Image (cartoon, rainbow, N blue to C red; front, side, top):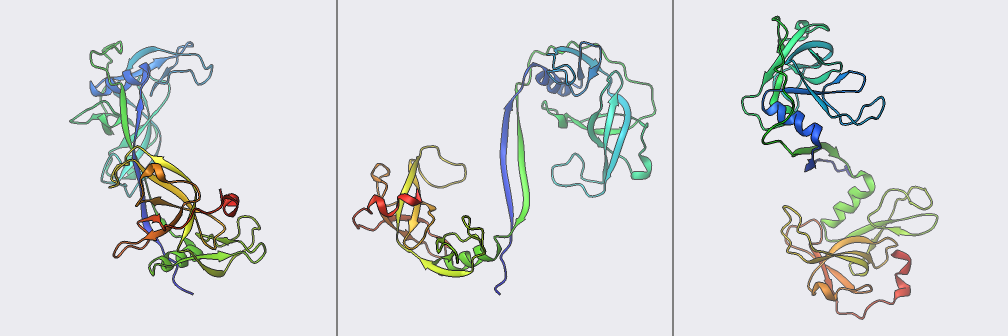
Length: 313
């Protein structure tokens, strides 16, 4: 059996969100080396602050400053920091109840080893040298044996508040397409498109999935399809994707390759975007060294009759 493919894959995008008045004050406070919580109707102080009481669901806006010192309530040692974590050397993840707060804040504790960390130990905030209005303005916590910090009584009103944040969301993993799609990808490298036929319903699926999605039985019989096909449906893309060197507008379509019972997707080129239509007959266009078609272009054949592809919409 041919070796199943696998490759590292990274999914990454910037996540942008706006802040309400409570989160805005909290993050702006961190920029100014001030830690703010919010007081509930029954007098509890929540840090980090939230806009609604998690017990009563009451809206809460009463901001109150707490001390930059506190007590570790629980912890876990991180022996191998990952990319983007607060510290590059081993550290402890800790929940710290800051003096004046009734809840704990999660952050990193810079300690020489797990033997130096314990529940109940006293710590203080170590501020980042450059602060922008983010949780990373707290570089980490550090052990502290001095007197509790004294809040200055800040009201949470700032001249230049932070109104939004951008968080980089990223997922790193190893992807394997499995036996069926490995064969499909290997065939594409030879400019062939191969699907698999269901032994029960006899439908040919491209790309193959290793099992029939209708009957639920395993598939193994390989069937070469195409290379020509029919546009079953399409959309016109008017917003340019980042890092994609294709000028808008362009057309992305579902294409039923001849002999296939499932439409795959591909870009349509070689024709004005406003002339693409359902039933258009197309063929793949390959570029040198590519492992998949760059796009599909019209073949010049008459359009396919609707009844020949209506079941593939």
